[in-house]
Image (tube, rainbow, N blue to C red; front, side):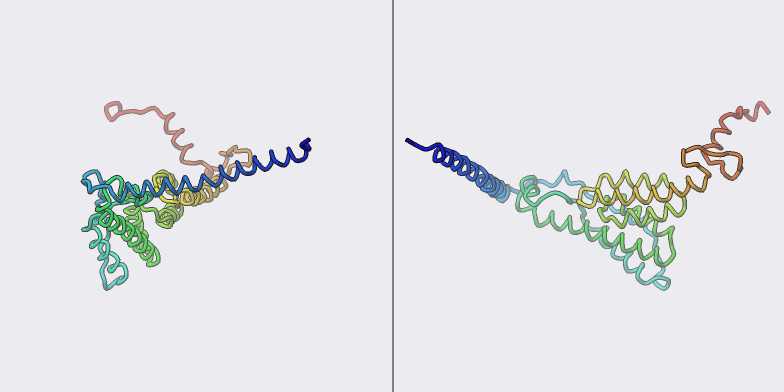
Length: 248
C-alpha cells in the first residue's frame, strides 16, 4: 500500500518540476523571439527615407555674439551653424532593430549619423544657453534655450534653466508651456523633467500667493490696495461699460 506521505511528495515534486519548466521556458522564448526579430531586421532591404522628420534648426534666431566680447559663445554659435547645415533627425527611443525593420539594415549607419547630429545639436544649444546665463545675457539665453525646446531636446537642464529665468520674471504661463513641451520628450528624462518644471512653478507661484495676502483658507483680503491681483483688476475692468470714440 502506497503511503499518503509518498503520494504527497510525488504530487508536490510534479508541481515543482512543471513550474520550473514553465518559468525556465519564458526567458528562452524571449531570447528566441529577439533573435528571430533581429534576424529579420538584418535581412531587411534598404528602403526610402522619405518619411523621416528632418529637423531644420532655426539658426537665424540664434544671437551672433562678438568674439571679442565672449569667445566661448562665439565658438558655440559657430558649432551650431555647422550642425544646422547637416541632416538631423530625432530618433530617441527607437531601437536599432526597429530602425532596420522600418528602413532596412543598410540604412542604419546613416540613420545613426542623423541621430548623433541631433544629440550634438541639443548639447551645443544647452551649452550656449548656459554660457549666456553665466555671462549675464538672459535675453540671449532665452532665445537659444527656446530654440532647443523647439527642436524637442531631451536635455532636462534646457527646460529647467529656461524655467528659472521665466520664474524670476513672473512669466508663469511660459513655465506651463515648457511643461506641455516636455510632455513630448521621448527619452527617459521626460518624467523627471516634468516633475522639476512643476516644482519650479509650484515654488514660485506659492510665493506669489503668500505675498498677495491670501489666508490659509484661500480667502483674500482686499482692504489693502497692494493686495489686488491682476485677475481682480480684470474683473473691475469688465464692470466698466465700454464707450466708443463715437459715443464720447
